[in-house]
Length: 381
Image (cartoon, rainbow, N blue to C red):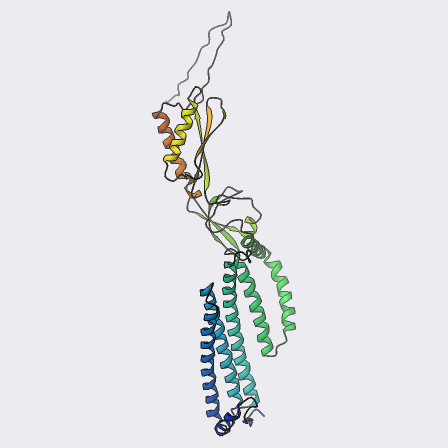
């Protein structure tokens, strides 16, 4: 029953009349006919691929040329694969093979085609998201930071559809598989709830983008550093001590974050608090502080540095030098240089930096003994 069967080698109805004689001549040699069909299919696939690329690139040579070219090459290659698949199936029916062999072979070829379609769809989704990301005025939600999120979602959808198609190719009922997957999903959800919490938090972090790669942030727990990686499960923070901290996304998603690189620009403002003695020339103090800030090469001139008097202290007049720097990472070294320069400039202009002092008044009452101060030396014996 599974032995060779007699195939119908009559010319197909769609074949042009001038090719029917050639078909009938070759049908007496089934293997030769199959090879001719495969060869014609390969040539037709090459022609179709060239035609799609040639005219497609001509018609779409305006914007995003590099991405359009990638998409066209992907589509042209996929069209060629489909043509080759059709030629192989057609050639297979001309061979004296059993029905079982033909059916299994066709299913194997169709499975390979489905895998090729999945692969092409994954590449096309990545290219399509990149193209949408470049159209800022129409698709603002698709940005560099959200592309990984949409890419992951499309990957899951494409793989799910492709898996269902493979099951249908082999006549496998997917109902039982879906029911089993639901039960397994519930069990996995309970067993890996922390992992799933980090996963969903990672999705929201990527979509909402409270920070991005390269930002300097301060967490409510006190850690401060540069964001080196925003992953699906965790976020990595490189501190100023060159120590990398890995924080689960479920934790950092619920934390209060101070993004020092946020705002209208990446620049960061530092505050240098200075106290001068009472009686100092206030205009001179302002002029000296302004000059010190302007002489520092890493201090921004736009916005310009400014000096503000903040109040009357117990021992000093309190001033604050406000200036901007290009990157938050330079805050420590620039503050150091400014403090050093201010101290030297105040010494040069004889501006006194006070320190806390206390005057002690001792009142001696009539008839009382004079106060004695006893100094006890430490015993070294």
